[in-house]
Length: 414
Image (spheres, one colour):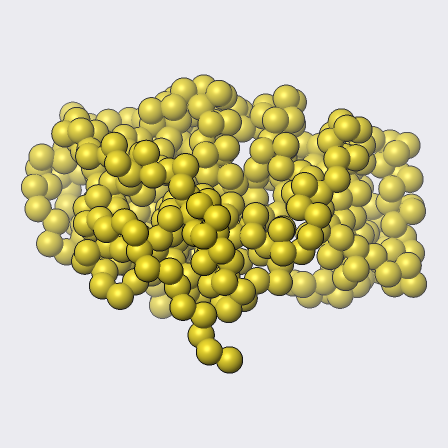
């Protein structure tokens, strides 16, 4: 089958314009400009979804995404929006994600697929589902530790207690939702106790498979802000859409006027896509000199980093999250965050927070090769470190002796 041609770009921009548009659209030019819970909601609605990961070294990924965009962000803000106000919900988009609760109906096809895969009534897991649901109905929200005496069952990560597999399956099917978390442990409740009946009963706004796929590709372009058609993890989680289908959908979205095709001068031969509603920002963005003197630590699974190829093309920055690599194979460290100053990635930082000692340690710091004007970055990095310390609730900051550039110690202590 012949490869589906992509549309000709109608917009042509420079690499610098692309970088600054990306950062502005992602809420990072300048960073930490949104405020309060309203700012948290705005960030997530602007990005459609942010990825959740439970590893907590200096906060979970979702908290790190928000601390770089919301002034004086605290994790309790996100917890309140998820588990008290319920304006947000834990679910599945690219991967385990947090998204606006009003998007619940749009993911009904994913939940139906989970019913097909895990909801067979003759399966061992579903045999115990009535007991699991009954216990929650009687005793209230439960975690996997509240169920005893069940055999093991096969699950994605290996043999697991059948009760836990039942919880995971019922959650994926939409029968259960997350009532709250305690130290990242999830407590599940019946979905009807968490969402309004009207929302639960709202039919899928996309009545056809093709309509859903077009919507999800369009949505993902909005989460990336600038997208290209080639395969990668940044397109994950869209049911039934592989490379050929994606190219056809992007072409159709351009024809419908929902998406525009563009080119970047310094990235020849590549076609990129932007939601039409973001064109006005693209036309406005130039980058105020003051905005370019601000710094931020970027989450390892930040939406800005979802497409690592794009990161290299636009920012000349290569990043790999090494948390799952053996220690001896890591180039940098276990939990390393990119450091953004203005519209450039200038360094990588390995922060570690001791919750008992309330101490933030800069365990590692690596300047990018060729970075100029390091001394001029001192105010931006000092302010960034101060805000990061406040976000964590750290009482002090120290710089490890392993950090070669000891100027950082002076910047922290000054």
